[in-house]
Length: 323
Image (cartoon, rainbow, N blue to C red):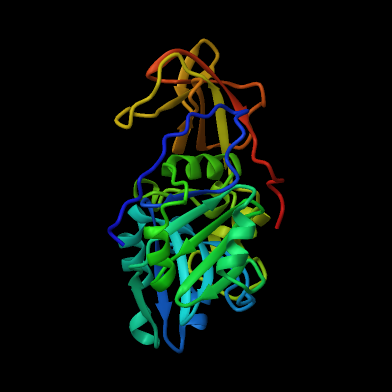
């Protein structure tokens, strides 16, 4: 699907009421597809989530780690017609494919980077549109080679093929917007976005996967399990995924380096790793970060390139100790 839709620029502030139905081509997202007779057992032994218990109409977060528990991929897993799809940022796919295939020679599995594009459907009318295109029930739905995955009540992600691909590319009545709006929702809903530059840097709990039902502590062994379990039972994890938010004096460009600093006494030090960011049209800025999990809620931050800016800590919209 090389086609790119004609997007409409929408300037929004935090209080803007968006149209009922919006679409975005998610060029920065992709998927690995796994098929073969041993796909369930092989994946079960590789990732943090419980693949065996995943129903056909469900999706789950998960992580694939190295032997030391560092994350190669933070993904959303779901069934597709002939196997599984592991949806994650496009930049992470090549390395993740290499790592996930290391032991596949001993199993009847096939792993490929999916050629199906991903589409985001957003708004209060998203559910009605999905019901028309995928006339079944559940949070994951199949129809003629396409898969719809529910993110929340007002967002669905589509892995599209066949007739749906054609209708989306020719649907002149559809309102298409920039992918940055989808990123905004991911950030504000506390969902991990692990790009290539962050691979092999964090344990799953630093990305809040224990709070997003992305780690099973009851399943059998998997790569990196010892570190993940130690982080839970011995409390060794010192980081979390959280946001910082505030007004900036100047608009950001795509080329700007986004480094966030934290006030330490009279000095400023690097606060953590920025995973994604978004700036509203009124200058308000929000960034998702892997950051220390013991900071005071009144901690002060700033964008390094705009030293006069001041940002505040914004905790995730869910409890971090949830399992």
